[in-house]
Amino acid sequence: MSKTLRKKFDSLDEAMAALPQKTYEHCKRVSAYMEIIFLRACAAEIYPNDQKVQSRLKDENREIARLAGLYHDIGKAMLPEEYHTFDPSFSQEEQALYRTHVDNSIQLLDKMFRKETKCTANQEKYLLQGIGFHHEHWDGQGFPNNMKGSNTTIFPRMVALADEMDHLFCET
View 1 (cartoon, rainbow, N blue to C red):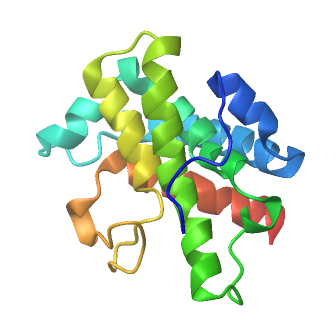
View 2: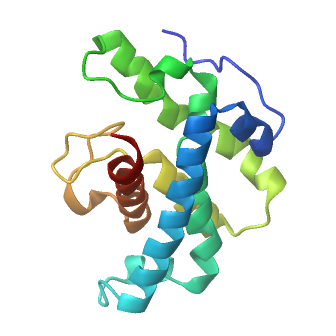
View 3: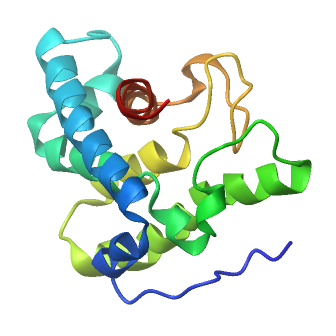
């Protein structure tokens, strides 16, 4: 299976517009959930003794949190629509193809985000972590890196929560 991009996009807006309506609407809802989760986490002062968490949970990162929700599935624009939703009956090759949406998202954002926004290096790092690791699971059974427990930072955990909320409320 080739790791090259199937489609080229000139902007993040163009890539978002290439998503099917259902996936696009999902991304918009996850973005809204993400902003709420982020603001509630800031107000709750979670993990008060964890400097890494505290450095991320600042109002200046609110827009980055929202964008992490919006762009978490942007890489699906490079996949056929039948691979936009995980199906347990997928073959191993189909599962691998589905999972490429994470790397595709990182490639698109890494290539275009700096050009299109003005953010700090840390904000960009938080965004890429949120998107790149939102399918990691606490038990280590997620992907792409099978990270376990607190090895994933707060942004990916928030994106995963927002993503799951939307699946529970709106889809299946």
